[in-house]
Image (cartoon, rainbow, N blue to C red; front, side, top):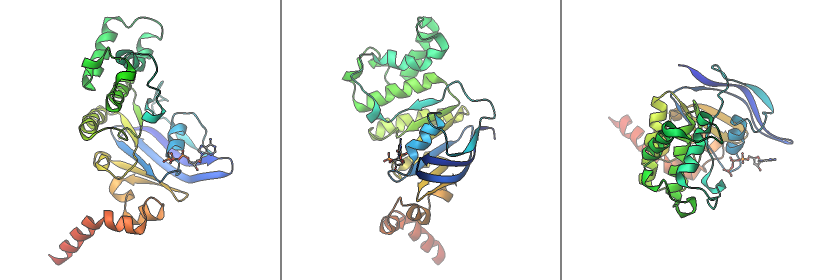
Amino acid sequence: MTNVLEIRNLALGYPGLTLFKHLSVDIHAGTTLAVIGANGSGKSTFVKMLLGLMDPLAGRLTWPSGRPDEIGYLAQLTEFDRRFPIRVRDLAAMGAWRGFGLWSGLGRAGRDRVAAALDEAGILDLADRSLHTLSGGQLQRTLFARVILQDAPLILLDEPFAAVDQSTEAHLLSIIKRWREEGRAVVLVVHDLSSVLDHCSHALLLGGGTATHGPVDEVLTPDRLVSQGYLSESQAAWMFRGQANAQENRAHV
Ligand SMILES: Nc1ncnc2c1ncn2[C@@H]1O[C@H](COP(=O)(O)OP(=O)(O)OP(=O)(O)O)[C@@H](O)[C@H]1O
């Protein structure tokens, strides 16, 4: 499998605060990595480092096919100022500026690409609306359309489902599935152990001074989630009770 990014022996943190060290991860094309951890465990710091906004304390990042011109990036919705005076189609089109230049016109082909992205995000009918008239879910769809137009090999989504309803989440997950099928790598910061994880192949669990990476089933175990401070023992027992029952039933067959 092709690696989009190889992370070796990474340590992350700030002066006087090491969040974790010794993390090595291969981010493969066509996979989805969930980044999960308690508040303050370093999820946003990891995202900032991937975006090149801060240097690691130690370690090395290698991009086997060269560092992409752009990383597809969806910030947390709360960081977005929707009073910005712009229409839905113009915000989405900002994802494609590399293709047509910042100040030149979009042209017919560019306009068609923007319309196709809005259509895929399910908001073509809102193209001429001003941003401040959108609901949270509609704004998130607009921001997804912008990421579609970025056309990047690595896509970073910071809590993409924090403020959206179930049907919007299902729609956005179908876009993520397509990205994966196209061979892009998708990294998602997720806030809870939700159904989103069913759509992720790998997980990176941060917390307790450690970073654990691997296939979802191997990383998000009750023991790890407790030892890395994400769940209390009683929460883990409650959340994984179904699994314990299934194991017990198997033992009785
Ligand atoms: N610029 C900074 N300088 C010093 N410490 C920082 C800085 N930014 C973040 N931190 C600290 O680093 C730790 C990790 O922060 P980060 O925002 O990465 O966590 P997070 O996992 O994204 O948390 P949350 O779930 O609350 O958003 C926290 O203890 C935070 O206070």
